[in-house]
Each structure stands twice: as C-alpha cells, then as structure tokens.
Length: 228
Image (tube, rainbow, N blue to C red; front, side, top):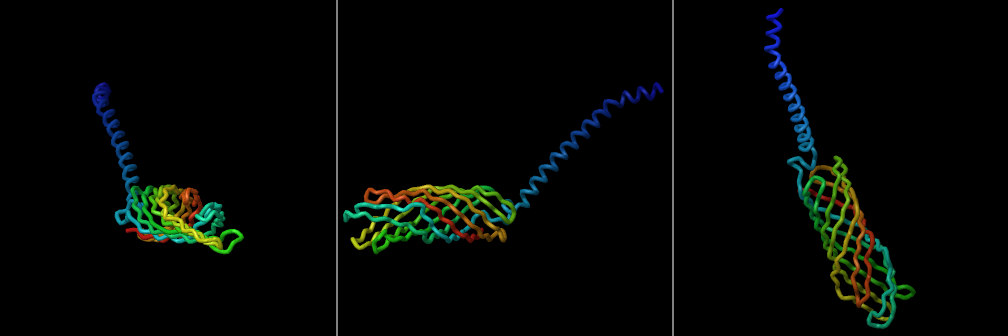
C-alpha cells in the first residue's frame, strides 16, 4: 500500500496537468464552435452570401403631397395670388450600394409636381421640381422583409408658373438645397429583385422674387428594384 501511495503522489501532478489541459482544449473548442457558428450564419445570410449583389437600381413612382399653400405677392404686376397646392405626381430613379448588410448609400434623380388653381380666379399654378438627392439607409434584414429608415440631402431644381386673368408669371428656375427623412420596407423576391413602399418628408424652401415658397411635404412611392 505504501508503494502504491507513493506512485499515486508521483503521478498526481501529471493528472492535474492533464485535466487542466483537457479543460483548456474543451474551452477552446467551445469558442471555436461559437466562431464557426457565427461565421456560418453570416455566410448563410442573404446580405453576406457570395452571390448577394451589393449594388441596386430602383424605380419609384407615386405622389407628392405638399403640406402648405401660399400667398405670393408682386409677381411683376402688383397682385396677390394664392397658390392652392394640390397633390401631384412624383417619380425617381435611384442607384444604391450596400456598404454593409445594414447600411446602404443611394443616389437618385427624379421629378415631382404640384398643380393648383388661384383662389376665386380662373387660371392655374404649376410647380415643377427636379430633385437630385443623396440618401443614407439603415436597414434591418429579416429574410424576405427588409424595413429601413432613411435620411438625406438634396439639390432641388424648381420652376414655378402662375397664370390668372391678371397676367402670367414665370418664376426663374432655382436651385435650392434641402433635407429629407423617412422610412420604408422592401420585400425580397430573390437576391436580385425586390419591391417596396417608401415614404419621406422633404424640407425645401426656394425663393422667387424675394418670396420664400416652402415645398415641404410628403413623397410616397411604390418601388421596384434590381440588385446587380
């Protein structure tokens, strides 16, 4: 028994070291498994897949709903005209790039308009705008659904025509800078095609003849996109 007791004490440090190494290997294996699991999820996700395109082309069509109407004075004839702004057409073509699966940068060019009638007078008003915009999108990839928020800046090329029984005014073309923000969602039919809905509010204020005309309002569109 004394000999066996001495032999156990001789092997005891090696046993302790063996169990310690075994625990380290198991912990390292657990960490490696976790890393591989995370990488496999990233590889399997649509935004990280090798065949997932990182660029897209998007066509948008919908309506522009101005928030304000205006009384405009001194259109070179000393009269006051009320611009009764109406909902009009809005469209845009945009090209985007996914910087990250949850972050995209988009450049777009479009057109929207608002047509109305001067109050208590025959005639019409027509406001035509060509926006050139840069937009950042923060997306939440949820498989087929992809909701997002957006914020951006733009240059708005505006043109205003007013016609009534007292004369006609054509405002010179203006370039005004503004902001926009909003939200939307996409439905991904495949890695290369999606449809969606987007709503954004714009803050733009061009000036005609020293008078500021706020274009503030909502642009709501249905979208069709192709990734490449």
